[in-house]
Length: 493
Image (tube, rainbow, N blue to C red; front, top):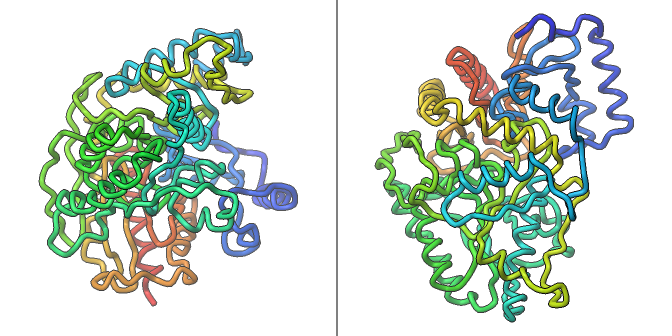
């Protein structure tokens, strides 16, 4: 951490002032605002570098959740900062309807090169929810253009999460986000998640996942005639508590969707760009993973091969990307799709088949420049191999929790490690939500030491690590120690 980044002027009172002014006028996301009066004090941040956030008083916080899973190469990475400054000197923004520019063209080319085979068209959006909206609309519109307007429903997994605009929210299966808005939402066809936390004692991840696929097969057989697409988060249902399943589900689903004439939408917003151990989570499918032999309900990290473009893997009809695409600097999203789908919209103006979805900041040049710099960082070294080592260190650092009396499971996929707290792990009895055990861990971690802490924003009673790929072995050790201390304290009574 550079000394130049530690604020020297503002004091604690200044930080408190910013928090008070924020409470007076800002409505913060994903929070009961009354909590900011007592339970979860607002934390004003003045600077950031690498894995560290810095408060106005100079106190540092290790960003163990990559600022909502976006900041994959650390804050203010010098290559991304330099590219943004250079881009700002030439072109800040331009309407993308009827115009184009170099950063967007280069980015689309590179994304289509990196993506699974067949994804050759790129439609830009502003954020993850918008990307999901694009994919849903494009799928239904495709069938309409082909004269099958009846194919307008969607099949989704229980416990899924795809964003909070109305279309994306509708295909989510996590009630806490969608229930208040149920009267406003279209109704998807829900299929039970293959979530392996729910597997029977002694069942392997693959066997459980195969068993759960029978529900999807039945839904497709019954509803394919009216279904536009199946949407899911490959391998990890992130906002649903970092629940995980075996990649064989993706292989089975790709074959079934093709057989039934239904699109497959892969929501890789959170799991794309190396987070699961390969560039895209879909790349795990059709490749046999090492047999999982869990101890205490645990999954060891899978070994990720050094990847090459266009490797043999599941290729969806739509792939939604965002979050890590710009290295956590600016909002940007992309939907990759096939030339076959593109051609269904390509016609004379009078046909009325054009896709009219748009955003004011579509393909913003600054955001595209940041994304290009992010892809350059990926190309500089084998990050997937490096992350295998870091993932192993995270696993070893959390291994003491495998026998913890209030930990039901420790599970991992690449650079995602989740710790499920439970009142009675043997009976899978969760803590009552009102006890907010995860929040206790969060508060302990923020104040772990005199001059630094760790950001471990929980998902209910799930504590997870999703750090930047630039985290060091020493910092992983610190992160794990703080988490274990917090879990011990939070489950003491």
